[in-house]
Length: 240
Image (cartoon, rainbow, N blue to C red):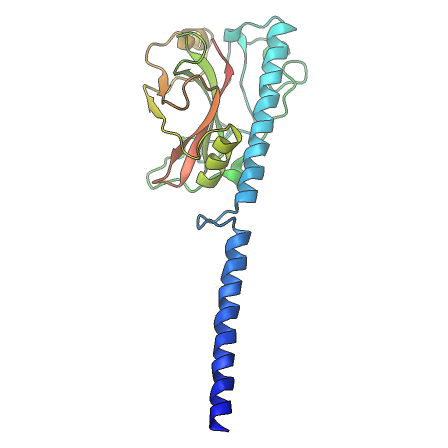
């Protein structure tokens, strides 16, 4: 009888251990096998959502330039779904634009529907200031991407501060490794401002330059920042 009771106790303990192991395995599978707090499936869906919107911006810009005969320096990127870290709308109006036809987010211009990606934003680090771009919001910048088009600067949308899992998923969507090496040097140069500023900035010699063996010649990719667990998507909407 003592032996039987011992065996029963052993079987109960074994069942508890196996149940705990099974629960862990199921939880891990639901998270896509990662320990980063977001499932692979959710990250893939988020990356596809962002990519779809960026494609709609490409189409809108092409429509404006080909149908409305809008010049590059006239394109207005004012975006009411674009915020500073402190919650205010990020000022990014290009005052070279004086009609609806040159506004990306106007039905009579590019016809693009503005989007907020705040739900995809990560946690920004200490010292992040209220006038900085909010996580998941966009920067409309002049940059030069290595070997993309001519040596002239490009116009780039930067989706800032997105979760690292989404950044990796976006790169996989572009047939790139999770975190391809990419270096950005130079100074912040916006594609907006008072009349003439966008034109001047397009020719800036100090604008950001992005280099990297795997991203050179690419018009869309995400730069990983593993130490902060976030990333930033760069997508060239005008290649010069």
